[in-house]
Every structure is written in structure tokens, then in C-alpha cells.
Image 1: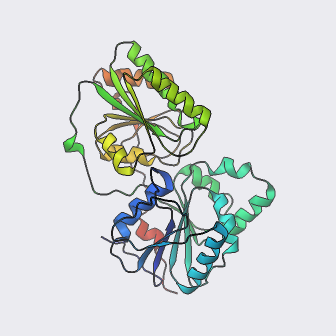
Image 2: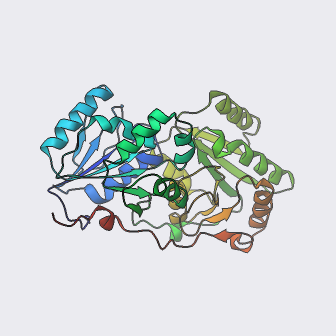
Image 3: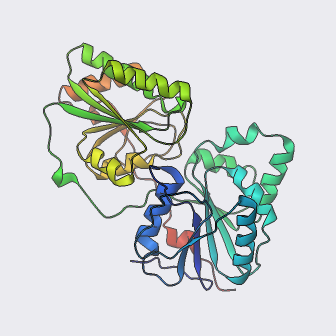
Length: 353
């Protein structure tokens, strides 16, 4: 069940477990990784730096919570890693996070590796002043390896930072497969999800689905939003749903199990993001037997049907073809397996010194 890794005494996963109603990104990756690889392993430990109520802790995982103000959390982490030699696997959303780790001296006999889960590191970095850019470079130089999630991330890191780069996946396959359990419904149910931010193009998707209904195709739509976003944008989504509640439902702040339950009864997942790093929900949807259409802004999970960003006319035509009983592969190219991906065993492996 565990990872076949050469350990420097111990392995420490530093991330953020999902709190109540959190789905996606670092939190989902942390939970899935811990649930698959860290359970009942005495030398594997999970360190959570973010104190919030309702944390979902996988059974059998040794979780270490460093609580308090973030400055005190960093001090606690510094003391902890001085006492415990090992491989430390850090998981953050943005490169800006590494600035804080300039304040955390690194034990020479330990190894630090890191993955950043937000797909658009470049625009965030370029909008910073030279002072913060300098400290980000200094902070990144403390890491022995960087894992990248997409070619876009690779280009950003390899042009600026010296640590070796490894292509890894943010999706941890649980081993569950739902294809045999799916049944075709006469009235298709379509899932849309994401943070209430413009880059997720939720309103644009809903407008396309409304147009599809106007030409005679009956569909039910479920919208799941999670996390913080633009309050004005949230009001617009809710207003649309209120005016179309006969065929649109909206949910927010669902647990992972609740969200999974919704996916089980859906046929198609739409993800028209303008920016993305991978799209964990795309992978989960494919493994649960859903058809998936997602933008080609990054490498996707194999089997995802790819469409250009903001090609809503193309989306409309694809949906009509699909609802008429056609196969999406007739009109869209599907993501093929990516040869450059490496297993986590290789990402974590260090020769004895």
C-alpha cells in the first residue's frame, strides 16, 4: 500500500487538509495522498500548518497540527525539522508562499521538495515588485526539487530557478472505478463546478446551456461552487439559478463525499477554465464514468475531451451533438497519456549520502 521510497529516517508531507466544505486544489490532494500512501505507516507523517475548524482527517494517518499565528507556526516548524531529519514534501498554491520559508533554516541532512498547485504562477509572479521576486528566488533555492503539474509551470520554473524539475500529477487514483455502475438517463444531467471567479467561466457555461435548451434539448444542470470569490459574481450566478430553477440547482461548500455523490448521478462534466493547472475534478469525473469537456489550457487527465478557451460557440455545437446521441470523440480531441509523468516514488527518491 505504501510508497517504495528510500527514506532519510522519515517522510513528512506538509500540506493542508480540507476543512468543512472545502474541495479541490491543495486540500483535496493532501487528503487523497494521505489516505492512499500515509495510512498506518509509522515513518510517514502529515504536517498541517493551517488551523481551521472541521478538518477531515483520513483514518490511520499520523497528523501533526502546528497551530497558532503563522509566525509562531513557522517557529514551530523550524524547531520540528531541526529535531526530525527526513524528506519534507511541501504543497502550496502559489510561489509567494516560499517567501516565508526564508525564515525557516533548513537542516542540511534533510531534503525539501515542493509542488505548487495553482496553474498560473507566471502572472502572479510578474505582478510582484522586484523585492518580492528576489526573495521568491532565494526561497526556492532552498528546495532540492520542484514538481511541476503542466508544461506552463515547467516553462515558468526552468527559466528562472535552479532546482531539478519533475513532472508529477496532482491526481491520486483511489483504485475505484464506476463505469459499470453508470446508467444512461433519458434526460442528461450536466455538472459545472469551481470557485466563484471569472476564470471558471460558470456564467458563460450556463448561458450556453440555456441556448441549448431553447433549441429543444432538455437537460438538468448542477452547479457546485466552493471557496471564496467575488461577491458580485456569486450574486449573478445565484440570480441566474433563481430564474431557471426548474432545470438548474446550485450547491456550495459541499464535503468531498457530498460532491462525489452528485458526480455519481451526472453524465457530463464541463470545465471551461481560462486558467488551470490540471483539474482534479476532471480526473475524478472520468474515473466515475462521466464524459468530460475541458479547456486545453493545460495537460488534462487522459480521456478528457479538449476544447479551446472561450470557444462557447464550439461548446454549444458539441453539446447539441452529444445530446443528439453522438460521441464527443467525433467532434473533439481527447487528452492522451503524458509520457513525461513520473511516479511519486521517483520524485521522492534520494541516493544515500
